[in-house]
Amino acid sequence: MPLINIGGEKKQKQKQSLEKVNNGSKRQNLLLKNISSSKGMDSLLFTPIHFPYLPTFKIKHKRTAIIIAVLFLVLAVFSTSFIVYGASYADKVFPKINLGMFEVGGKTEKEVKDILQKEISDYVENNIALVCTESKQEDANGKNWNSTLEELGFTPQIDQTVEKVFELGREDSISSRVQNRFLSLFVSQTVKIEYDLKEDVLESYLTAISQEVDTPYTNAILTLEEDQIKIASPENGYGVQTKELKKEIRDSLEILENKNISLPFDITEPKIKEEDANQAKEEAENMISTPIILNYEDKVYTADYNVIFSWIKFEEVEIEAINPLSPGNVYGIDDSELSEQSSWTLQVLLDDEKIREYVDGIANDVNILKVDQRVLDNETERVLKWGQDGKKLNTDQTIIEIKIRIENEDSSQKSFNLPVETEEFQIVKVKPASNGAIPLSDGKYIDISLSRQTVTCFINGESVYSTACSSGTWQHPTPTGTFSIYYKIVSTRMRGYYGPGNPDNYDLPNVPYAMFFYGDYSMHGTYWHSNFGTPMSHGCVNLSTPAAGWIYNWAPNGTTVIVH
Image (cartoon, rainbow, N blue to C red; front, top):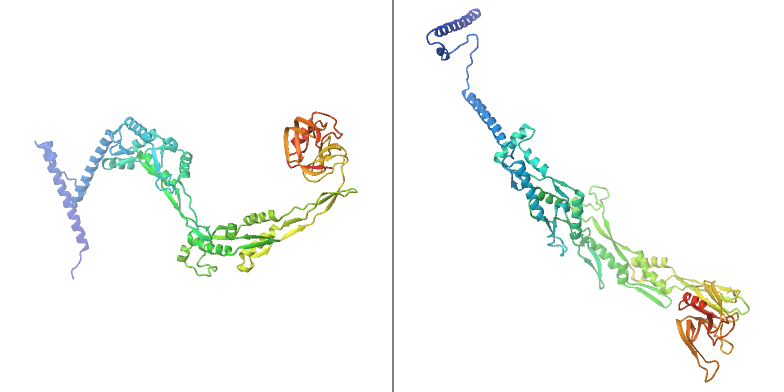
């Protein structure tokens, strides 16, 4: 085994270092000699220099050094070009930049502004054509709305747009600036035109268009044709997608693209489809299958299938979704089945108000108003008005009976007697008025007292007007009884002939305010005498002209006249 001399190895290394220093000193001496020789400084420039006290570096990877040098060279060239490129477009738009649909690269700010103003002016002249092509309303299809910017609520912002064009390649961020200048050499960039938009104006304009072309969906409904209930097919609804339409309008304006914009439509499916109405159809068919018979005395009222169907109303009802994992899902519906089920259905109900209209019609035929019998409270006990029992249909109970029989499937239980209640009349004794007039209790009437020679007008038993009169003499008496005015005339001629030379003959033109109540007998104005309060006539009731005019205007045809 060889011995290792550690101390000897150390001395060997020191000896090698000393030789390197000596060699360096020799090179320095040689350099000084060259400098002092006739070659001078030229020799110095071409003489390798070594520094003995500095470590020497040896580049092992020459390829890496070359790559680094090339990169530095490229960077220097690119930086110089970048500066020159930016300077050449100092007051111009960088190339390959479009404003809307037209190129503005290389244009000055004024040139860009002039171009933009001209293009907007041309665009405004052509307007934006909104075209309807899919509406279900035939008169709306093909209709155009040539819309101005003002109608749409858009105002172009020219200065802001030009400023935005010139910002490309001049951003504050160095990275963005370099990127956009580089892209402008190879890739087209488009700047959109800026607008100030009044949302409420645009919304109002598009809403007006929607109202013209929108078509609401129609649900499946049940109709009665002849004696069959049928399901009218549902139809989809169509409505303008205003959100999408706003986007298309904005997109067109931002690049000034003249084009027709077709109104985009949303399709809305109906809630109630044919399959949802089938169950309601079956229920309604059971309801109208047998007519309802209503009886009263000798009268029969029949509510047939047309009438019963008019009482039925169909209400749209939303079905609660069934959770397939919930305890209430006793039918074991799985997710796939649940998704296919409609969330709406038709519920069959009876419309009480419609039934009441029908019952009220029967009540008008059945009901009789109770009239109390009125007799004169004196020794004569004269009947002034005959009494009549009242009849009244219990409409609420009738409606209940009808609904019970409609819902009862037993056809033998479809008939019933109307619940009509009777109210007996009362006998009411009436005392004569102080002037002898006989008061009644209802409406307008005229009392003519022959014994007192008075005419009194009443409303519901209260006197509103009274005047003296002249009735017929004993030779020509005024008829007594209860009558009514059947004919009125403002002025007429009255004549009476009892034979040649008879002093009772008369011919009176222009008799005012004649009111005929029985044959040729009337109340009328009188201009040939003023002896009122005394019988003077040939049977008529003479009145002063002012009194006759007042009664004429107060009493319509049909007013009751009681002469006693």
